[in-house]
Length: 233
Image (tube, rainbow, N blue to C red; front, side, top):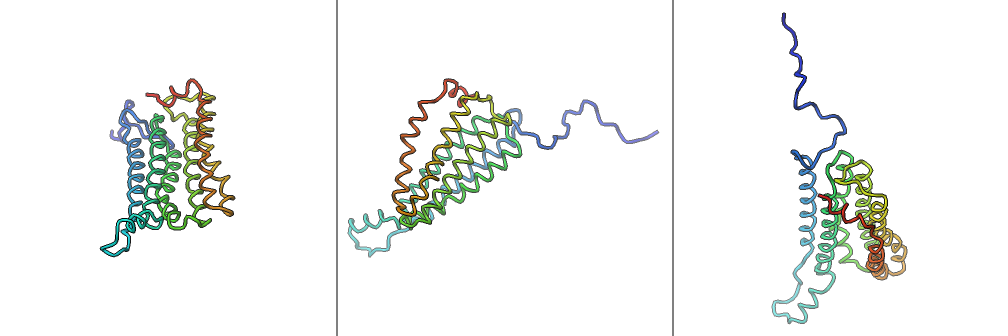
């Protein structure tokens, strides 16, 4: 008597259920793919910043003063390159620290990360726009909105990962409140400054320097267990 073979009851590779998460350890290939893909997007975005660098259109016998003035002109792209590299570098460090907190990823976090990376890849455009039209309200607003959106998505991903149990160590309520305050304050300052750009784009940009003293004040409220959460192994 013949029939369909019965599946072995001790099958070591059962099908993965829908909505499953991918762990960092024990063959976490999918976790590593998300991390490596994120790093690749950052590398491409930071490399694209150099495209806007232009050699000054001067005579071959131009003096050093004229060449220096041309290089320091906003339209040369040098300012935009270093500004964009500094900002994207800061975001990459924050993203790296966030992934250190994770023990696993799931489909929803991957989707949020893709949206976040889309804004990172877009970032060279508003940086270039700002370097060429620094006194234009539209360029300042677009730049501010892009930066605020990236920062807010950092916060959304952190809150989701904590709620979904994706972090290596569950954060305490105090740690989560502190992380929310520390991550949410910079984009709020950026968004609050945008109406000021209609009157003075330069002043709107300068107002972002408030993030430095405000950030230091927030750091003083760091709970005792925050470092244990941030440096979980």
